[in-house]
Length: 323
Length: 306
Image (cartoon, each protein chain N blue to C red):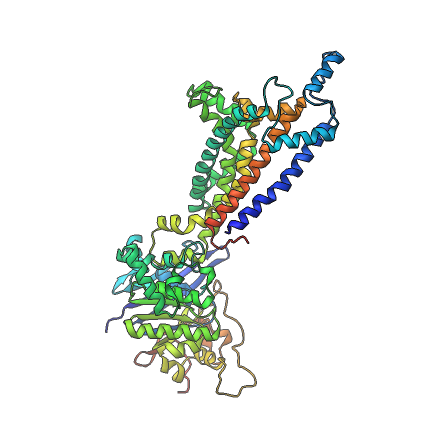
């Protein structure tokens, strides 16, 4: 199967007064039609920056895309004209964001903003689009959708707004949905509902989902493949089973260990000592060096090359880990 | 917004209006001098006649209640200085002129101010931003009695395009309204720039981009409403100020507006004209602010008055 989106050696830097911040440094991965790819990493790992810059949604300057390709059906999104890109945004690729409270326009009725993608990309008439909008709201589980269309965002709770965001992203039946921490700002119960909605809709429409999160629980419930990111780099990628059961990278393992589990009696939750390094002063070698339990001398000077463990399971680490 | 809120606001106007009437009535009467004091020696008989004609011989409280009674019947009384003219007549003639001037000035202020502000916000920290914003600083700093004569010098005397003064043809309207509107345009451009800069950094603008909207559509459909709100809240005081503050402009361009009467009456102790014009301004400010509050509800659905 041909990948729907292929990221090749993508690099993006922020040019700030303090120097160049290497937010995304040479990452590569791909996502197949209909699958869910989870991108996991802690704050500052570059996961959100990379997603936002594929559709060129970050202001430039300060962001500068330094190199690489983002191939959507083989066509480089980074080389498209503004107009070509506009045709892709909200049409073939939709996005939902982390902040449901502020991602909707407070001055516009929910229905009016919901149907905008249909009006621009599908050429629907106002009435047609409005009818379809009601169905979309129903699909994400909003009760009394006719009435909801005429309400304003401030009349909804956070969970309801995120449902509206999802409905809005899905009006055009996109081939790829980029979900940037879609449940981070929500209660745990609401979080589960939102994930269920995404799962169900994916079953019906066969769209691919690129799911960005720092929450391994979310990834475990939804993702087919997982990419682990740290300090702008990809550290490990593989199937969900590869990462959760046979992880070959000290960072992935530490991350898994520091996730609270309901089925284990823990007196103290293990943490990864230290913090993510300053991205404007990265050492030449592995950025995890200072915090790594398996570090070696070579890690300090040269970033490790790709190491294939199984087909599709790759890590970037010198250390030989027990299986 | 409820109809009841509107009623309450209007009802609130009554006691405030009454208070304003009372304060101005007594303040102007306690000020030294009077409408008939002058350098000329007037014989006591004539003075008595004059005072009797204008009920000045009555006790002060009686005059006050007489004024209130007339006011309820919308009669602002006769002018003490302009013989044979009532305050109603004076306002009736001068107010339309002031309002016309104010209207054109406001149009200038909004058109120039908003477009300059949007321009600056679209390309912040470039020449498109620096040039209009520098001009706006000038507009805020320079008083009308500098801008007005400067405009006359350039456009009337040097270029000969527009008349120097007067209020007859449509060409007469251009320079005064530009002069008066300039400072407001300057202020509005800064408010617009600030408003749009703020809105454009909001998450929902990113959402709009992610939906595939063009930059123009984003500006008009998503950014305009929120971006314009600071201007709207400024509009109430501006509107009142533009009509009342036209005095300097009116005298530079010899326009028969209300501003002249306002100042003249205060120095002449023309009691009824002072009262009439002050009350008119009070009403204007009150109504303008009410209109702005209503406009706010229309623009921002989150604003509710109970």
